[in-house]
Every structure is written in structure tokens, then in C-alpha cells.
Image 1 (cartoon, helix red, strand yellow):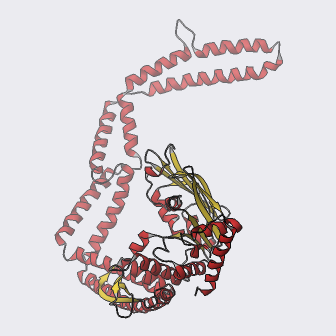
Image 2: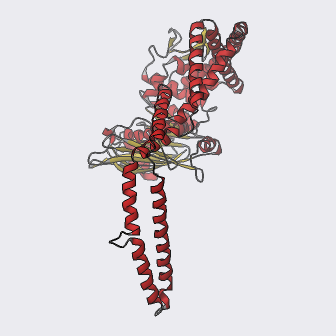
Image 3: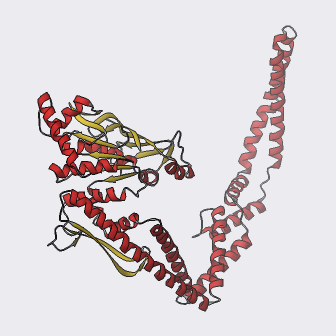
Amino acid sequence: MISTIEISGIGVIDRATLDFGEGLTVLTGETGAGKTMVLTSVNLLLGSRAEPALVREGRSRAQVDGVFTLDEQQIAPLVEEGIDVEDSELIVSRTVLAQGRSRAHVGGRMVPASGLAQTVAPLITVHGQAEQMRLKNPNAQRDLVDSYGDQAHQDLLAEYEKAWKEAVNAKRSFDDITKNADERIEETESLSAALEAIDAFDPHEGEDEELRLEARRLMSVEDLRRFIDTATAFIRGTDDTDGASSLLRQSRDQISSARSLDESLASLERQAESIAIDVETLGDDLGAYARSLDADPTRLAWVHSRRADLKKLLEGRADDASGLIEWAQRARKRLEELVTSGNNPEAAEKKLKEAQARVLEVGSCLHDSRVRCGRELAEKVTGELHALAMADAKLISTVEKTKPTSHGLDEVTILLQPHSSATPRPLGQGASGGELSRIMLGLEVVLGEKSTTKTFIFDEVDAGIGGQTATEVGARLKRLAQNRQVIVVTHLPQVAVFASHHLVVTKNDGLTDVHVVEGEAREAELTRMMGGDAHSPAARRHAIEVLTSAVPQSQG
């Protein structure tokens, strides 16, 4: 679950800390106070696009830090990715610079925004207008039916995916043999010629860099000799001047004389002796290096020739010698596939037919399972809709067979029949925002029993509703929060009254603050939400009586 979020410099929020608990948490506040910025901050931690406009005016950056408390099931995949999780807590941060760049860290390690989407986003399910729009998509509807399926259904999904991949590979092999004979011959000859040239050259790891350095050394012999001779002269001296070695020996002798008068200088004497020896050794090594310098035009010509040959081999294949070696390994494997598959077209055709038959066999079983899962899911969500002021509504799932795809043989469509005399229509054709909100909530309540997600965030789930319907929405959110964390942004007191934790977003003098309300402060906020005088004890008592009396009537 989300334990804490710290927000700094985002929109109207200068600085705010939000502590979330288990169960149902509501976030309320007047329009324009900054509730949207809180959700925006959460989405930044999930990898959403970081716009420079989010940075508060006058600030150089905006930052969001989040602490997630995880269970063992959530920790395991993160540890496999090398992400540090200490004491079951994952620390995530996102920084947005006013210049337009952003940075993200997960478990102390810098990651791209896509890394947040892969590691953090699966921990939370967020529902807002975008998710409602996605609900109209047939692919999303198919995924909903699949997510409702039991373990046997999940096994069928995995089995179909395996069968599909095998059929795709079999089709590729068959096409290689039959439809692309000329291309196969051309590719075989090209790979054979390239591998023959690479084998003859016989490159080794890092050779391109070695050749570059050797060429530079051979072309710079005269400059090298001049530099080294000068350095050697500074150490050994000349006929006219003493070098560093001679001066160090003289210094050592003077220290030795001083040591005869003061034994505390013994360590300095030894140090001077060591330095003098090191400098003499350096002079010897420089002399040896100078003697090794040889222009060797023959060797230089060979190096230039080998670099040119290597450059030709690299063209279109790799950037360096190491990459060329890896390319050759892949080319050998591909060449082996071309040669092997080309020897038996009948076997390739048989394998393709068997793979395609397997796709149809598993796909048919998956179709039957989807029909069952879709029917059960629609019936359960219909029951939820009846309690959400859609008493005559009916949700219907249809599963029509189509040509095989990577997802199965089916086109799944979820239809809504608003009342018994209406014609059922796909969700994408006519369902209102309020209807979609309630359908989404009903789906989450039903699917929540099977979902591994521990945290749900709802925005505008109560759009277009009020009265007892709002109370039923609150009851269902409370039920969903019995064994998971649910965070709801709401403007309805009938929903807020069900909360275990209540956060209020306020705005004063252009600055937004977020704080927990309890007791009388919470009563005052609920009263304000009902349109009453939050400062009046009588108004607060009346508001609480109205709200609490509605709770037992709910069917949640």
C-alpha cells in the first residue's frame, strides 16, 4: 500500500505530506483547492508524463517522494530486478525540472520513467476518466473477462499463448522454405561469404581500440622520443646542469648529516632514500622506453591495412570488434536454421498444420471458458448496478468467434441494457459518464475478490450521482477496502462518511495544505460538503444524523 507521499513545488502545492492508512481513505476539499495536483503527484510516481508546467511558479523543480509498504508477493519480482527493498518499504521519487527534464529513482536506483511504469504502476490501480474511456475498448473488455477467470482459465490463456507462438514460428519456417526460396538462397550465400571473411580476419575482443592506439603510437615516434628524452634529461641531468636524481641524492646526504645530530630525522632520511631510488628507477624505465621506440613503417602499414579491413567488416553489422563477434554468432545460428529447414519442406508443412490445429483446439477451449466467465461476470456486476440506482439495468457479455489472433479466437463485447425495453448496446456506444462510473465500480467490487492489486485509487467515481445512490457507492468502496487500501477523491459527503481516514485539501493565500481531520473537524468538513454551516454545532449534528442514518439502508 501507499504509506506516505511528500509533495513539493507541484502546481498550487508548495509543500505537503500525506499519510495514508489501510482501508478506505477519502480526499475532499473545495473545488480548486488542489485535489487534482495530489492525484497528479501519484501518477508521476507511476510513470506518467512529466510536464514542466507542473512546476510551481518561482520554483526550479517539483518533487514527489513516495513510500510503499509491500508484502512478500510484491517484493519478490522487485528483488529479481535488483531493486532494493528495506524493511518491506520501497522508496520512489520523481523530480521534474522547470527546464523540462525529469528524473526518477526506485529503491535508490535511477530509472527511466518507463521503469516506474514497469515496477511501481502494477502496485496500484487508478480509476479516472481515462480508465472509463478505456472501458469502451473491446480489448480492455476482453481483458476484464480474462481477469475474472479462475486458475483453469489463466492456464488456458498461457497454453494458448504458447500454441500461438509455436504456430507463428512454424509459419515463419515454412515460408522460409516455400515462398522465399530465392531470398533464402541469397541470404545463405550472403551469410556464408560474410562469415568466411570474418573467420579469415579472426577479430578478437577490443581489437579495434588496440589497433587505433598502436597506429597513433607508430605515427608519433619522433614526438614521443622528443618528449621522453626531455623528461630523461630532467631526471639524469646534462653536462651543464644537475638532474632531479643528482639533486635528490644531494638532499639525501644533507638529511643524513642532520640525522647524525638528531635521530628523529631517521624516518625522513629513509623517505629521501626511497624517493631517490624511485626517481633513478624512473630514469632507467624512461631510457628503456626510448630505446624501444621504432618507427617501423612496415608494422604501421600492416596496422593501417588491418584497420581498413576491420572497418569494411563492421559496415552494416556492428560498431566495434566485440559487436562483430556477436553478429557472427547470430549469423551462424541463422545460417544453420536456413540450411536445416531447407532440407525438409514436407516436415515443415506438417509441423505448421499441427501447430495451427493446436491453436484452434486450445482457442476453442478458451472460447468456451470466456463465454462462461463473461456470463458470470456480467451477472455479478448487474447485481451491483441494481444497488447503484440502475435497478432495471443489465450487463451482457458476448463472445463471438473470429479468425485466430495472438489473444485467441474471440471478439469480446460488453453491452449495457439500461432498462428492459431498451436494446443492449456496447459500452462504447451511448453509456453516459455516470453509468460508466457505476459500471467501473461494480467491476472493481466483483474483480477485487480475485485481484492481486493491494491499492485502488478512484477519481470521479461518484460523477453524476447523489442521494441514496451515493451512499451505495460509499458502501461498496468500504466493502472493497475490507482487505485492501482504497483511496477516493470525492465531493460527496455520502461517500466520505464511510472513510476510515479522511484527508482534507485546503487553500489559503494561494498555498495548498493537506491535513487529516478527525472528530469535530471531520464533522465540520462533512457539514461543509452537505452545504451547511461548518461552524454551527447544530448544523454539524444534523449533517451527521442524516449521513449516518443513510448508512444502514445501504446494501453494501
